[in-house]
Image 1 (cartoon, one colour):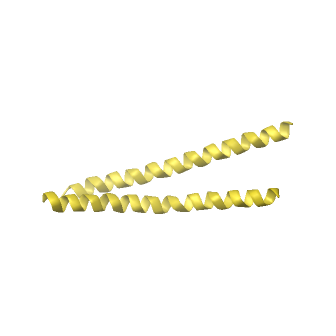
Image 2: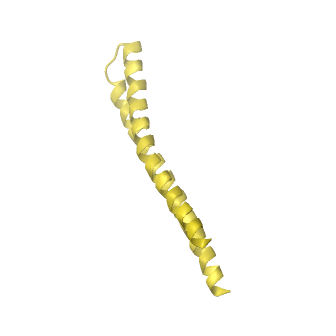
Image 3: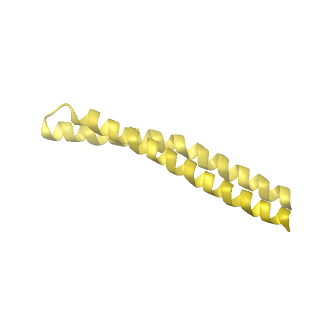
Length: 87
């Protein structure tokens, strides 16, 4: 059932794409939370902003990792499809 495999592939891609937003939000809030906790611990007021920026950067890094992984899967699927067409 070739159509069924394609449908599962699309569902997996949608699932991977939906987790990016969750990861981005969690990284951002985790960074802010760690910074806030360290601010309270050390009695300063700038660490929450530093860790917030680090959390946002981690969220973007996760986004890029997922995009790269999807591109590799698409490239592998395309080259496999090309091989089948050539045979």
